[in-house]
Length: 504
Image (cartoon, rainbow, N blue to C red):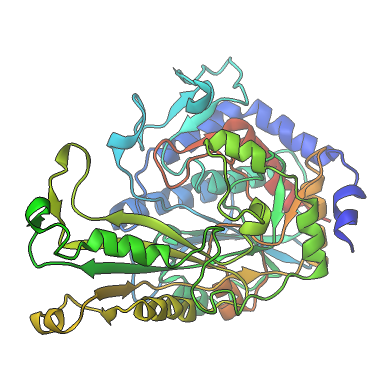
C-alpha cells in the first residue's frame, strides 16, 4: 500500500457512525466538560503520591460508572506510588484486541508564571488562546452552546487528561448511541509518564498476560501544526546529561581577577559551542552513526506532510531555522542535542560583578531508531574529554583541582530508546482508515514524532506494536505555563477514539 493511497484513495468523508458520535457529544457537552473540569482540578504532579492516587481513584470511578469491566490498579511491586489504571471490554466475536493508552500524571508547575487570572489547578474557560487575545469567560449554563474555539486552561488539559477523557467518552458515546464495538478494548492509563516511566517495565512484566493485544493505541501529543489529524508510527527516545564545570573555589571580584582567573561560564559556553556547527548539525563523533535510514514508504510519507515551517516561524517569532537543510518534519527524524537549561551566578536585578565558581547545563538527547541511549550519552562524555576536560561524577577534590586545568562533573540520567512501527502492517492500514473516516481532510502520516514516550518498553516486554493518534492542538503549551486544550480538538478526539474502537 502506498502512502498516496492512504491519503487520497480513502473516501474523504465522515462516516455515519462518526456523525452519530457527534450527535451524542453535542447533546451531552455540559456533562462531558463538567467531568473533565472536575478531573483537571485534581493536582497530578508527578512524584506526589497522594495526588496521583486521587487521580487514579477518579479514573476508576469514571470507568466503573461506564460499565467497564475488571477495573483495577496495576501496581509495580517495588513502588506502589505509581499505579496504572486498567479496565477492559470484551466484544463477542471480536478477533482483535486494542489497548488504549493515555497518562494522567502532569509536569511540575510554577503558578507564578501563569497568566493573570489563571492557576494550574483551577481550570478556566477562555474565548480563544491568550496569543489571540482570549479572555476568561464563565462556563455556560446548561441551555447554552459551547463555541468549539473556546479553550480550557489548566495543567494537563492537553497532556494528557484530555486523552484519558476522550477515550472514556468515546466508549460512552458508542454504548449510549446503540452502536457496537468491533474489537476487544482494554484501557491503560499510566501515572508516571512525565517522570520517565521508571516503573512501567515492572507493570508490563507483572501483568504480561493481562496486557496481551494486537496493538497499543497511544493518545498523547498534538495534531499536526497544519491542524490536520495525524497518525504517528514512532517516537524518539530520550536521555539527559548534566554537566558542571568549575572555576575558583569562591566567587571572585570580576575587576580584581578578570583576565586571570578561569571563568566557568565562559568555559561552558565554549564547550557547548564545540558540540554543534553553524548549521545546527551535532559535531560529536559518531552522533549520527547508528541511525537507521528511512524506508521508501517513510520517505514518501514525509514528502506528503504539509509544509508548516513558515507558519510556525511566524507564529513563534524567529526567522532562521537551526538546520537550514531540513524542514520541521525532517529535523525531528534525526537525533538531537538541545540545551534544556543553564545556570551560573545571577542575572537581572540580582546580577553582581563576580566571576562565578561553577556553570551547569542540562543537555537533552533525543534519539531515533538505531540509537542506543547509553551509547549516545557516552559519546557526549567522550567529546567533553576530547576538549581537554577531566571528567568526574563527584565534586572535585583539592587534589584534582591542583592537577587538572579543566574539570567537568557529569551526571547521566536514565533514558530509553526510540520505537517505530512499520507503516505497511495490516493493522496500520485499519488505523489509518478509521482516522480518515472522521475527517474530510487527508490525514497526515508521520514516521516518527518529535516527542518521546517509552514505547520501546511495550515492544521489549510484550512484543507489542504501537501507533499514536494524538488529539491536542499544536499550541497547547504542554509542560509549560498556560497549558490548554481547544474544545474543537477535544470534541474531534472523542470522535477519533470512537472510530478506532469501531474500526473495520
